[in-house]
Image 1 (cartoon, rainbow, N blue to C red):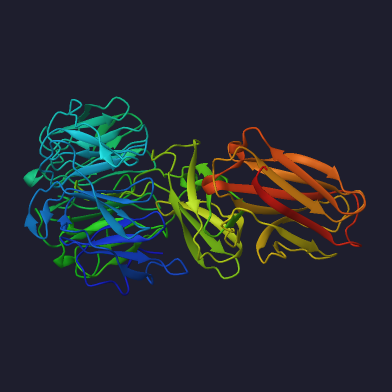
Image 2: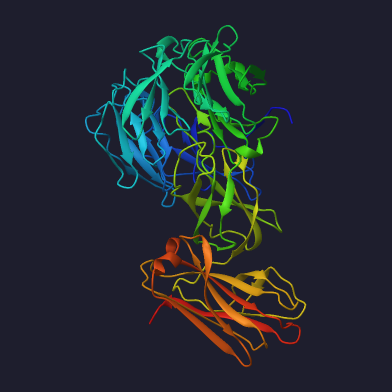
Length: 598
């Protein structure tokens, strides 16, 4: 499959700017230099090309262009500053946070003493706090998403002012920048100490006219390609902490305030144009050794690179905007290496619509922040998208994630966690779940999607397995659907049902679970609760069923919190095991109640 550009269908008539991937798989796009915002949601097949657009709430008195932005750990969208406001040069210090759940904006106060901010740079640190850099000084400031407040500004030994300087997160957790004034030097910020240090000469001068610098992108091999505001480019090797020269752009082209993006195949797409802010855009892919020209978008001759923007989508396509109504999807040739993909190490085998769960895995935050720009457009995507695909229909649903355990990149075998919430509209039944980061998906894991849990936190179900019936889903007497872990009529085989419940309160001193099974000679009934801290089911009780209806019960009076997940989630397995064949009697399993003891 060669490189292709496909026009996006049905977009609004706006100056599309700063497209950002939200935590539910949708994309927020600003009408640049305006207070209007729009959202693109992929269709049921997961297609952004054929997705739907919806206008969002407007920012009151705030229509910025060239500003700091980021998605926060709880899924809200943060903006701060702006070189322009409604088309007028302002270097403002306004800021707002958008809540996707409420479709509303809340004003945020600027850091103390920062009366003017303008084209502010920002980056999410590994600990989930956001760093902003003041372009009019050498100061930075840390924003705490939990309190929605800034700490005290600090310089940390920064050698020059931050104006025009971009930021790149490295595998060691430090942040790289190229000095726009103190050229040709570079610096590293250490979040653990809050200080800057010299990172060496960039070999080539990466600063062009107007102190403009190009984007920096970390590749899977640990090298950072740093495109220049002039014709020259350089490479920073994170493995050796050294710089080397990279091939220059063809004569006359530069990357002054231009976009770049890491592709799933490991290449980096970059947009260049001739001279400072002149039209005649051209596109290239960098493979770590060479710059190769690729076909440009239609009308590229009328575009300039500084108005361009790239966003990596979960489909592996790149969304391209250029501050006009026409948007494009870019697809490249080749694919990713398996070692670059995220992996799922622990996830629920069954979920309910509207409920939240914890997923664990490796490389959930990818090997890079992926998208980049010169200095004043930030839409990094180093966070996992959780995608559920219905087995029968093939329809796709993205779950809203929150609270990734880290935003560090290239974390190797480190196990990371993220909370995901299944949409209320999720299709029920057998499905698969994947994590997608920077357009690279994990292997699929089987999962069952069931209906929402009753609000009162108490639920009962009962179902019957008849001889010879093998099924993956049990539709029980309460009208709900539960995941059948295994069913067999063969002697010695297990028959078990897994169910999820959401208690009204997460502050629970104890949990009482009870179940019953019809009499089947020689069969043992067992109850299991899921230990969220150990990521494993714990066997709480076992009883021989014998003859007649048998009831068994377990109460957790110690460390009950271990068995309570997000939003009061309690996960139960009821299991029958024994030598008897089940072809003569129906085998009935039931969880009668889950709740607070007493």
